[in-house]
Image (cartoon, rainbow, N blue to C red; front, side, top):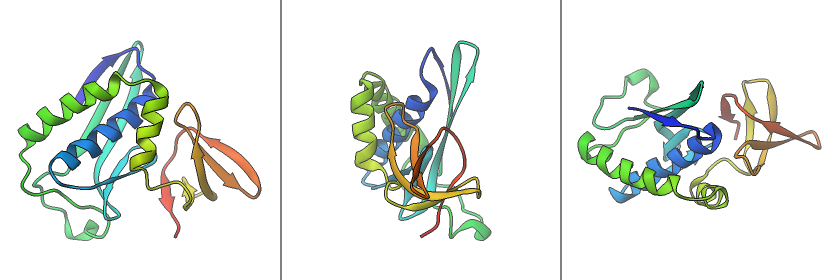
Length: 163
């Protein structure tokens, strides 16, 4: 699905949407975790992804959730799906929860994100170039990576767990 929003911080939007996906899955009895910044995992496998793109005064929020679909054999060790949840039911629940997340201030979004995250404290690589420990997220929702005794602010990139 894609949702079009006007005037919203796209980084915090990604975090809020991740929280909403995790809470929606939880409402159907499925516990998930958020891998910074935009992947939702169940037992370490990706079940959903989020992408926010800014276009002029709008943000396009794209969200894909694997519900009832077949996972190709070649990616079964990386991806999973949720069975028994109808798309329409998920969508209605998600939109209601997302609306509540959008009403929260930045501090509460960051706090809620920490309740679902599975990234902090892990050794990771960013774009297969920068390697360090995911130390924290800053007040804007960007990742703080500890690399050789210094802290790097990561604003975007493909994050991969190394341990």
